[in-house]
Image 1 (cartoon, rainbow over the protein chains, first blue to last red):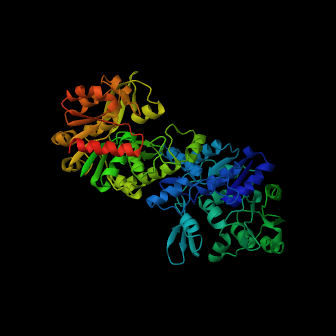
Image 2: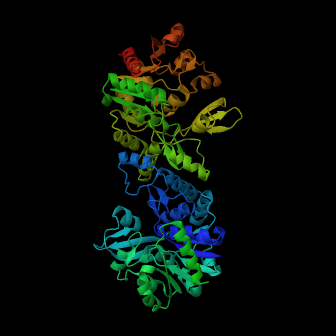
Image 3: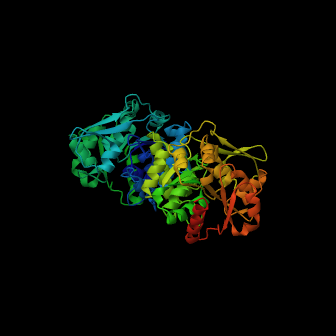
Length: 308
Length: 308
């Protein structure tokens, strides 16, 4: 069995490769829910949906999030009413959030609903939220204002420099049912190529998760989301720099070294392998830029082999 | 000033004619909310929306309800999740219900929201719900089962015979702010060509409304929704027959005679004028089949003249 810690787009692409080299039912994905938000009265779980849609092969290939062939008639119509529409929910995507809200109202937990949505999309992996309790990633920006992650990322286009990151509710959140067992029982635990601060960070902040990973350190392997000092997608590089973390695979290594024994880094970072290894991790050098699913699959195979 | 009691499609078409012959700002429409329901967690007010969309010229001309050029991507996507989709909400129409829910949650009343939606669509008339309190039209069908109106009308395609009609909550509902004043102050009060039982009936069931109409009886004029024993649209004829009311303009006259001094009936019903007048109402015979907006306008003009 394999457990994988996942954020959004980068993780989803990696997982798409993973299920080409191992049977989907052997994979349990533990997904960041720190980005979850309520938009237009609907509970939105961006990373859970990105992982599910991508594993179903239904994602928008251009953005990596949302659904392929999506339309936005409802959002366009909402503009008439003056409601905030900075977070664009597609018409088909809306159905997922309407379903989630109906199930929430009926008392279902985040993990029950995530499983139902994965089932509806015929995803063979087990998809777990990191917690059934709300954990909200809050970013303090330069001018002292605190923003919800989505406000910062979507509405403010990830522009304001980040001074601090806080995971609201993480103190008291419990890992969702199955999370700790998945880590404890896995032959291999993968940390997908996601933003270490706001995608993997919230998962690590759930009490018990980091300790469970430390207990399996020799079986935990991460893929660096930073290549040659830049994030492939998203604001990880700038955010790391803002927070005084070197925006490189070495910075990632330092953040993960206590619970992770190997880091897969890109060929462009070959010269940084020694620095990565100075953190106490093994460095595996390969092509990590997932330009197509063949490369994703090769990367997954190489990553699994790193701690085999 | 003119007050008009209105249900859905028939009323909306009539009102569209009315605002061609009088200034929209002189018209206050008092709309049935007995059909209101919560669908997919969203508050849906079918008659309010039909009246608003039609007065905005945005209605689907084929159905008379919903929006022209509507798409159903969200509903189609919901089928994946097994939620009930018998009530098809269009993608653009969904925006109205999302807005309504957001405003409900913020504490706005049904009438405040109706006014905001009318404003957003630049409708010049005042559009009032009959009450800010919920009144639910419930139909008892032959086998003793009680259905919400929409369940009967949409899900069951108006097929089960109706044994009884009940307006849940009508005992304690209060007329929405402005309703009684609109009736009391109007030069003319119009009862639009709507189903007497389930469209006009719920408005009459709100305490105080029927009495206010009786007080203005000489100024109240109705348009029969039944032509030659058949409803132009919808199940009014069968429902009247089911409930022992003659499905004709005469049956309508008997239902309205206590608060209404004139009934506009169709040329096809010329021979029934005497029977209508035997109820104590004057009968006005004209073309009432609104095949186009010119006929709607002529009908409105003739109806206003009936009590001028």
